[in-house]
Every structure is written in C-alpha cells, then in structure tokens.
Length: 143
Image 1 (tube, helix red, strand yellow):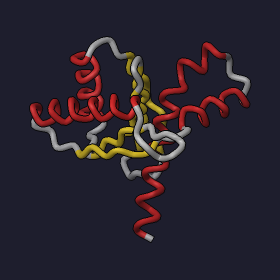
Image 2: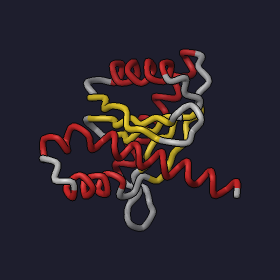
Image 3: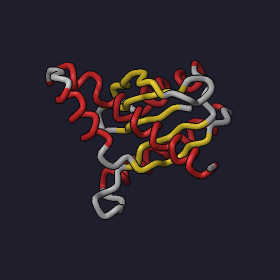
C-alpha cells in the first residue's frame, strides 16, 4: 500500500511493509509537469507492487472540500486515466488528510529540525500519517 500527500509543488510518498503492519516515509516527488509526475508515481507503483494507493484529501475545519481538495480530485482523475492506460490494477482511495502536514511540522519543530531540513522531509512524513490513519481505520472496521 502507498500513501500520497499531494501538493501543488511536491507529492510526499509513504509505503507499508509487505504485510501492511508498518508505514515508512519513502520520498518526495517534485512536480515539474503532469507527465513527469505520473511517470515517477508509475515507477513507484511498480517497484513496490502497490495494489492500493491512498491519496490525502484536504478538508477544511468543517469537513468540507475546498479549492485544494478540488485540485487533488483533478489529480485523482488524471491518475486513474493514466493507470487505466497502463493496464495496472491499482485501487485509489481518498482519505481525509486534515492537519497531517501541520502535525508533521510540529513534530519536526519539537525535534529541533532546521527549517531547511523540515522542508525536505515534511511531505513524506505527512504521507506517512495519511497512510497510518487509513490503515488504522481498516483495522477498526475489522474489529
């Protein structure tokens, strides 16, 4: 399973271990254009044999979708079309990502990580939190 924190400039990536027990931050994709972004994601989907891709959906404090959520929904459609063309079998799930970036930033600040270093890792840590939250919800449903 793979989680993504989709931003305008970067996409943070996290993956589970093969058993889905733990989540590790993997990397950050710097978005240059759609073809490059989809190509980078496609290679990761293949390398990690991803069956489910969880995209963080930014909701506002009222739980509603705003302008950034609309951008993520557009990216979801573009990604689904790309995956369909490649013939891969990947399920895309949308998951509330509220406050994940803020929580990751606070954690890094508390650990006294410099601003420059925070910028390099914050997106993949947010992706890790998104995927952990999604996995926890699956476990809650099965209990």
